[in-house]
Length: 457
Image (tube, rainbow, N blue to C red):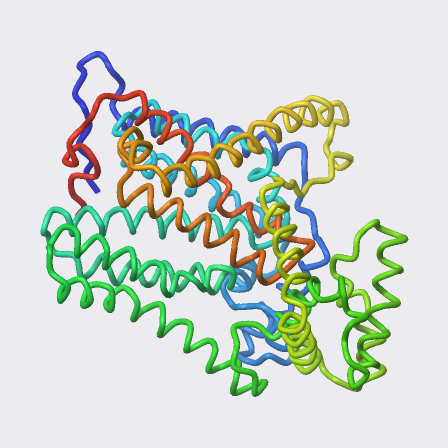
């Protein structure tokens, strides 16, 4: 990929900024590796089980609870925690590079691109999730790659250049992102729609727009259908994961007492565990998982079968009590922006390192929350005001970022309550990039389209 940038003999070239970013990113990760260790969480075991199933080409251990994207990384590391961490550090490093190019394409200023890449590199949330044996880091890489490929395809459409290979690559990236985190299933519709809008805008005809959208959609659709078909052949459940019912019940458990008597066995167990969770933890998130052993004992159902029952019960409650569901979704959407971190400071060695990192995170946490507020305000203002769109030089690239983040927040809020903020980790850096790019464009002089991602090879 070649980028056209403003020429200034005294300025550092983009490649120099990128080299500096990579050096810092490597140094930071070496420093963290020297004083921390990989950490397992309750979900880690399910990914390891899925990795074993991938090797055996069955679902005997995982029962289809996990899509195969992240388990493939775990399998590549042969389930060894330290190796998984090293691979995830490489993913984080690659993401910093992708963020640099995303920001460069938006602003055409290497220094601003460097700041955005550095924001990802020094974000303790991202760094410590790399040490967590969870899917967030790999998911962040696939989404950053999808965004950059979107920018490239849109620019090639604008330039009337050959685009089919890039559309296929975009579809493959989108499919990979979905198989790493099913929350991105909306990419099946969003990416082709954005391609169609770009094609229609630049070509002025509907026919090419539809064909371009179809080319981008086909690889994603084939990838998703291949996995869903395999899952169906093993579990007789047509889905991407067999545990989605345990997520959606986090909404319905708030008013599970309203379930009818025909569901009394499951209802009463969930009610009892909801109160236990409230007393012990102050919330009722993941009540379904806490109640799983007793639910299985009482019903004799497997996890996939229980998931279907929880989905059915939840759907019926949502239809019967839409306002209660809407209130829970609203709370989940707000929680999505709360900026979590997965770390255990007591594992840091030497111990004195913990205090400065805790102070750093206190500052970063406030800045990231401020960025989230700024993103929501900018996106809302751009949607409602032509003047704001003009001021920020709003284009298909900013639309792509805003749509991906907003779709992610809404989809996750609809599907789960209690763990929504963790699902925002993957798109957190994109939020920062959009805020920085909009701020810069607001202050920068007007530029023509040919100063952005001029060509890709």
